[in-house]
Length: 174
Image (spheres, rainbow, N blue to C red):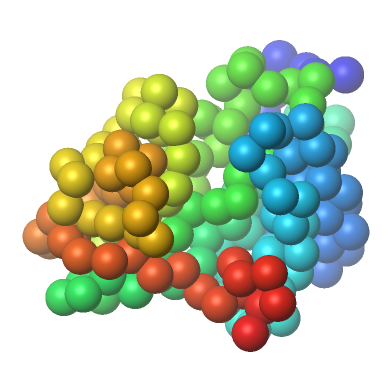
């Protein structure tokens, strides 16, 4: 089902992709022990709130969607123009083949061109560390272990303080 990475292409979502992104996200998170199953709804809520700043797809050579990543505004004291990465979804049969990493690198290049100052996320440091994300322990989120609260500064000062994501990440989306 998964084609070779050399044929990988990227493009922003279009209105016709919305249901496919929802379904891909549901499949990708279905077997993840840390998932509460709300990831597809988070993307819909971000879109409805006008906070889906970048919604980027990775496609195989035939145009089939293999992966998706969402970026939305975050709040960090003393910082502006920072985005949160996530959710990121890769077709289950295509996971651990570098597609997600390639998609994130493409997204970062696009965001850098748009003047984004940095990107923050909550995730496994063994997954995101090799992509250039780090945790210095100065950025926190809801009492999580500092190693899980990661960032990549594209321009300006390193972030410090409590990270806040869009209310779209809350279960009720309020």
